[in-house]
Length: 347
Image 1 (cartoon, rainbow, N blue to C red):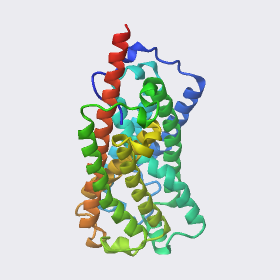
Image 2: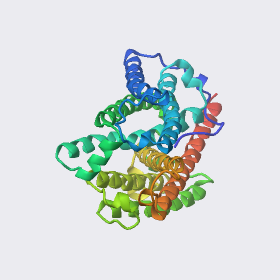
Image 3: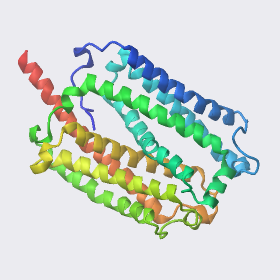
Image 4: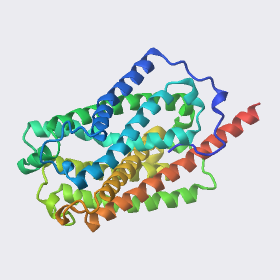
């Protein structure tokens, strides 16, 4: 949802802000939160089975192959969080191209937002007995319980620290582009194309939203037999959140494209946050599931395989996410170009 057009004002036009003590503290917290996860993953990559109980399917020949590939990828992804924390706080980070900062931050938002929202409720449901006994036992056979606690707590801390740094960075670098209300935005020649893209994204978002809501409500149609028998409160919570992210993406992109009537009073930053977070969660979450399916191909039973409705939901979610991102990128590229023209005329 940010400028990717060359017309963006040069970053050097405004002095990079000094790295203050609060930013250094947030950076340290974000990096420290990555270390336990990186240590655990590195141990698995080097052959240690800490946190993996005897009898886990991860210790089979097929399981170890998939585990190695996914661990290598996730180590790189968590290392990217460290790089982002540095880029968001060092003066040189202000001079990086917009796309180089925003694309990985969009993906990080999509991967971490569901954890921030869902993990506390998941823990609460576990304490209150909301987990199905069979599902809980199978999770325990897969990995030790403390692994989930360590990993998801670290992800939550990373998300909060990195999110705060991102908000400060956006305020400093693109704050003026996000100011005002939707009604204040001028119409441009590309507005009809953006409206078409927004409508397409919103209509497509109905498909995964309906599926996730159906599964959250207790339906089993479209779920693999193995998963249909393991539905618990946490599963329903996750499906409900997926539907919520689809709704957020649709609402945000429609607000950005159709900014008349009551919608005109909405702040631009609010609509952008909805579109950014919703589209990121849809794209990153579905992309990760499709990647996991690819890594596990031939290593799971038919009762665990992804079904056609699930694959459809993942594919449509990725399309919706890209459409929303494209609509937002064009909008803010034009805003950036307008501000550049105003600055040039002022000189």
